[in-house]
Amino acid sequence: MKHSFSNPFPWYNHMLKQNPVTYDEDFLHYFGAKGTWHIFRYDDVQKVFQDHETFSNEYFPKIAESPVSIAMSVTDPPRHKQLRLLISKAFTPKAIEDMKPWIEQITHELLDQVEDKGEMDVTRDLAVPIPIQVIAKLLGISHKDQDKFKKWSIMFAKQPSEVDGGAEGYFQAQKEMSEYFLRMIKFRKQEPEDDLISQLLQAEVDGEKLSANDVLAFCILLLIAGNETTTNLINNAIFTFIEHPEVQEHLIDHPEDITKAIEEVLRYRSPLQYINRIAAKDTELRGKRIKKGDFINLWMGSANRDESVFANPNEFDIHRTNLKHTAFGHGIHYCMGAPLARLEANIALRVLLGRLHQFQLKDHKQPVMNQSAVTYSIKEFPVTFQKR
Image 1 (tube, rainbow, N blue to C red):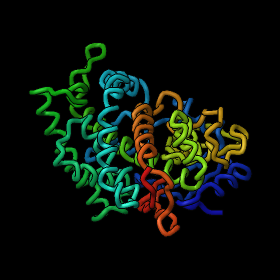
Image 2: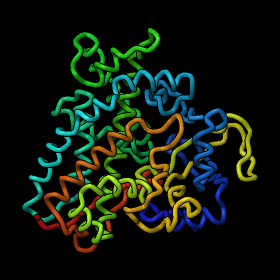
Image 3: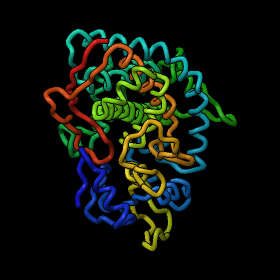
C-alpha cells in the first residue's frame, strides 16, 4: 500500500496496524538525505517528541548559505532553550492578541473582493493572503514587498529539486531573502520600530541578546512555519466543512463551537503531516534497532488517527472531548506559533461563516493538492457559495 498526497489516511490505517515502526531506505528528505524510519503510532510519536536526548532535532545540515539551519526548530538544548526564552520575550500572548482587529480587517477586505461573485479559490483568495499579511505586519515588512515575500515562502516550502533552477535557484532565493532581512535588521538596530524584529533585537536573557544571524533564522522560520501551517489549517477546515454540510450549518448557528471545530480539523487533517528527528545514539523502538545517525519521520497525521487513543478516528466530530492531538508537536519543541495559527483560523472562519454559507466544490471537482508528503496542502481550491 502506498502513500497518497490527497488521501494518506488509508495508508496510515494500514501502517498503524501492520507496521507501526518501519525503515524505508528509498525515502528522500526535502533537505537531500535518503532513508528514514517511519513512526506511526500516537504513543511512539509522543515518546520520541519527549526524549530529545535520544532523538535530536539537529537533523538539518548546517550550511552557511542556509540561515534556517541554525533556527530554533532545528537546535537542541541548551541552545534551543536560550533561543526560545529570547524569542518568547517578543512573541508574547499580548502581541498575538493585539493582532485580532487587524486579522478581522484583512479577512473582511478579502471577502469584499469575492462576495458578489458567488465563487472563489479559497487558497488564492483567502488562505494564502491572511497569514502572509499577518506575518508581514508582525515583522514590519512593507506592503509593496509582500509578493516577493510570498514567492520566497513558497520556494522554501518545496524541495530544492522542485524549485525553478533546482538547488541553485533554491539557495538564490535564500540569499535574496537573507539580504533583505539583514538590511531590515541593520535598520532596526539603528532605528527600532514597533515590530517583532525590533523587539527580538532588544530582548535579553542573562545579559545575552540574539545575534543578527539568530534573528534572521527566526524571521525565515516564521515565514515558512507561520505561513504554510495557517494556510493549510484554513483550507483544511473549509474543505472538511464542505464534506460535512451539517457542520457548516451548525457553526453558522453556533459560532462559539468554531474553536472546537478547529481542534478537530487539526486532528483530522493535520496541516503538518510529519516532522523529522535524528537518532543521537543507538536505541530501540517497538523491537526495532535504530542506529545513531538514522533519520526519523514522526507521522503526526497518523498519530492523530490512532484508534487506541481516538475513538472512531476517521470520523470528523466537532464534539469530540479528547483533544490530545499532536498537530503542533509535543514537548520542548511544541510550536510557539500555535496560538497565532489558532487565532487566525478562528477569526477567518468566524468572519467567513458570518457572511457566506452553502459552500460547495465548484463543478464538484476535488481540490488540487500540492505534491508534498510533509503537509496536507491544497494548491487550487475553487468553491461556490451563497451570501447570507
